[in-house]
Image: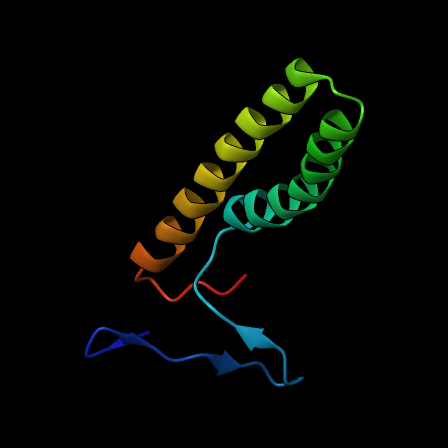
Length: 85
């Protein structure tokens, strides 16, 4: 539902938010945000333990996860068929 380039959030009969999305995009966003918490913890642990390889791996994986989340959000915004998920 696009009106002058702005998104309007609709509500279902039960009052839940309905936005254009695919289950795949929702999974990418939710699992990605969950992974970011653990990657942040591993990065901090790597800094405390003075383990630069562990910190580096956690930072690289966090960057990849953020890019994946951004791409999933962009896919959601491009959808125009009104499918609610």
